[in-house]
Image (cartoon, rainbow, N blue to C red):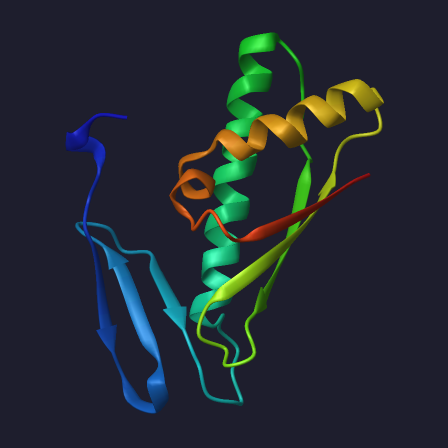
Length: 133
């Protein structure tokens, strides 16, 4: 990815602590909501979604280089917050790989996922618990 491929994300605060984020020049909208009732993700959940998307993108990229198919892989990311709900202190990761992969392949990809840019950008004192299916 070149610097020219990176676009700004513009976020606007609405009523009831709801936000709307749009990638410059695009139509897709990502919404967040903090107050109940809500249909949208909270910002901490969006962080978990960004981590999951980045990790699975890394898995898919590496698999394509190795000539292996990991289509259908799922990753559940559950963030846990400190007592004051001021920061994420733990991420529980559950990888569900296709049954066609060996245990060694699954372990390899779960570890390789940790090289993604979002994971590398998060605080080093976040604890990760990884489960592999």
